[in-house]
Length: 283
Image 1 (cartoon, rainbow, N blue to C red):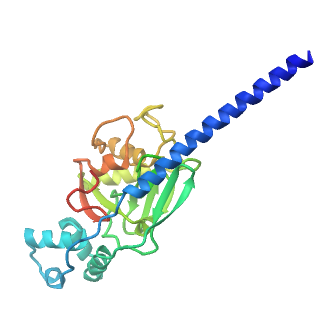
Image 2 (image 1 turned 90 degrees about the vertical axis):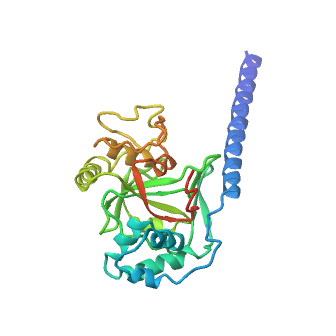
Image 3 (image 1 turned 45 degrees about the vertical axis):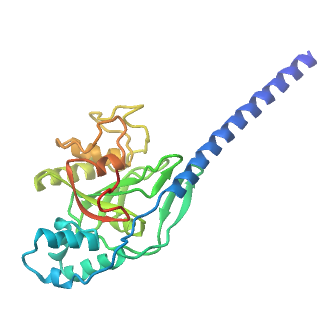
């Protein structure tokens, strides 16, 4: 009897050790993926000279060539330029954006978990003038072998407020758009919808998309578009808010919506870029 118990204990310990070794191997592989993604990604900076754009900003009737030069010098598209110039101290804001656009910033990061890494910088960027319903995306979050990124929905452009789903263990919440200015790359996107639709999207997000548990595999292990949303992740939250009102922002139509899918949607236009190549963007 004692020998039988001993054999069972020995077998139990062997199984436990084997399981532990497998888990450590899996975590090691995931961790290797994080280091690989960190090493292979480079934020883009202009490889051409900074120019004086003051005269272009003083013009009242800018040409396509003017906007092309301003995009190359600031990362602002025509809509980004005009919206930003329309605000108080708009000219100074555009010049600040240009200054940062040409600055090769120092990037550092931190492990949120053994398989997740977030990149940041201590140098503050300046955002274009934001509108309600705009979307912010970044490629600065790594999940193992995947540069997953992050996305958020602007619900108060003037007040600098967004709704986002951050990660495992936290519920979706309000946050400041200011959190994006300390990232080494970002894109400001504007969905191609009228203001009335965007107002509905923002209202819906405020009433229904705050306080939801994070669930990475929404669209794979659960319905992508349930009648009543109970869980979400960053890109899914943005996508779900707009699809409720007839605008599909998932560029490839897959089950899992990614920030990169939204960045490549034909239903958005670019307002501002930083850290991404102006032609390749996030392809």
